[in-house]
Length: 232
Length: 83
Image 1 (cartoon, rainbow over the protein chains, first blue to last red):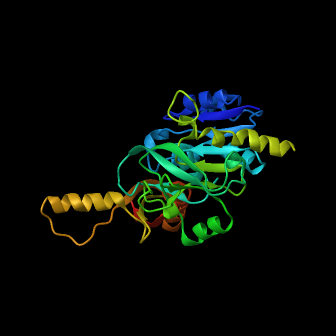
Image 2 (cartoon, rainbow over the protein chains, first blue to last red):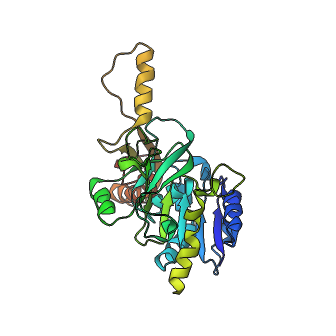
Image 3 (cartoon, rainbow over the protein chains, first blue to last red):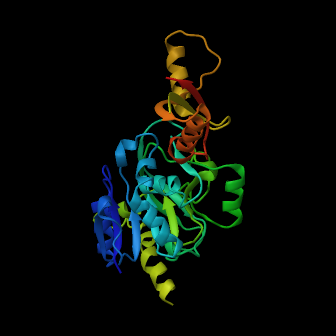
């Protein structure tokens, strides 16, 4: 399998993502957005960064590119897709996942380590964890506040599509542990299929053992899990 | 064809938190201004040629739907004027 890590103008987590995936023995390569989605891509990662300078809204310009249209098509066929940070903003703007990530409640860029609780461990992305597990992951965003209409939010909860919520170190989902004012402390959600997920925290920055913590590795292993399940 | 300017105003839906507007309001208050509330909006002025004002509005509406506004957080309005 080869995970295509799509690089847009202004992406800056593409190399980190390839390195983290490679460390987990998941074959990954960077793909420049103009070169199109490789036909043999068995997974797609939309990496973090500031595609198109966050013009108009974070992620929206990248979301309207032909390669993301191709990503929507393969996602509908079951190819695993993970959007991280700017990739999460792109995913929501492209309609791969519901809701929107918009300006932090603080109106500031926030770069810090947070805790998230695994809300649904029955997805490829969270198979490595148990429900309620608390992960320490870094965030680095100015537009990470999850917003959704009442109807959309209720449906996400009802369908168990909230993947991660911001929490304190003990796993309590509190206002104080919500770094950006996200509705329901939501840090990551699933698309229509569980093989499509977006999240604001950076699992690829918490995967290599020479960095601080490896709690994110299991999330990236979702590419393996999704592919294995598709073949089973 | 007639030359028009379509103005698309995109604003946050009522009830959606606007941290930038709140920060701007606080800055104005620090400067000594008195105000009750402040809302911000994005305005796009689009010059285009169309068969009628209705056709121009329809095209600008589609632009808002497909790119300029995000229906999760935004409302928008379109106004068309001769250019």
